[in-house]
Length: 320
Image (cartoon, rainbow, N blue to C red; front, side, top):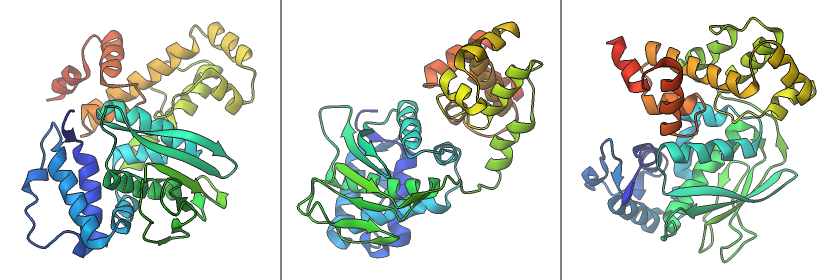
């Protein structure tokens, strides 16, 4: 999406600025240039608004804008927050980037006991602006706290004062001059949690009780149930075997005896859930593909068409 940015990101940042730093955006400023459409929002006008906000209210306001994620109810955010490890959030975010054609990525540089170092980088020749780094860092403060990081702290190792905590225990502080592309997060404790989302919990977690596939075998049923609890995760045989407390090879043999394989079962569960959401929900095709764990939109279309004989959009059209 050359020269454009996804509407979701713009809505979160601009909404957060208006809500938590009212003076950051001048009253009467014409924001029509960042209204956007299905192809996204023009990048330069968006960047101009971020720079205006920083000049008026400091870098801190861009960090605080991320707090708007704290009460947002959205299927994509639902997937990100349905994570029991910090690094899993980053893995899911990388897959999201492929769905929304993001220009930027967040990479893990280091990780250890109760800490992780992330880098906000570009997929193209132009690196993110400092204002974009700050806004993205603020969103990650909210994400990490919501998945269970208690006593969270954020430093910018590349800034003029790398030891300054721009965020600690719920309090924001004006960071020293940048750059801000590298983020050092540390936390005192981690207790996996997930904020309830009215409507989405019922829609996306009710799958635990369903067995709409032919899940007659013991291993098939157990694995399908586990996968349905977090379709947004990239499940591996080793992950599942560990969760079920069996050896991977034993699990493979059990599935073979039930007439299937691990990859076949995962694919079947994903397509079945996608079919259900296309038929019963108002989520967009892109949202459904992401929620159900497909690698990207083309992967979603390919796998769905192979199993059901039509593309996801065609299946949705049949509902009308």
